[in-house]
Amino acid sequence: MKKLLTMLTAVVAMALTVPAAVAAEVAGNVTLASDYSFRGWSQTGRDPAIQGGFDVAFESGFSLGTWASNVNFGDTSMEWDLYMGWSGEISDGMELGVQLIHFQYPNDTDLNYQWGTSAWGSTTRRSILRHPMRPSSTRMRATAIR
Image (cartoon, rainbow, N blue to C red; front, side, top):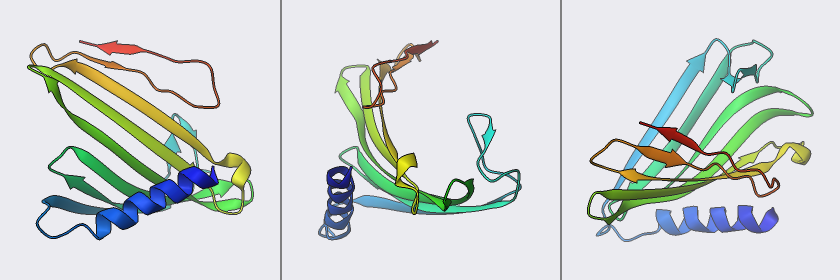
């Protein structure tokens, strides 16, 4: 886990030092919410949440970012996510996207985990297949959307 966090930190640092000639789009966001619900479960005990993050997207299709929110469980009061990915056209009319997300909970490292996804689909038929993968799990789920 420390290797992954070190790798993500290094990628963010490299992205921030990329020469100005490399085109990148930077975006930020801030949200005030009455509750932070994730997959149907309140992460804040149904209390308000303040959330925010920023993303960097490069013309090459590579992107990275960070996002944070207050939470109310375990020994932590914060969730901090780091993510990076790539998406682009791999052949005429076919796209591929991959993403790795690291969920970090300061003061309660037992909650930390990584989530990887891959998605591919035809740009002409509007179909997509997704395969979420957790390294600590042997299960993979596939969802087809048409």
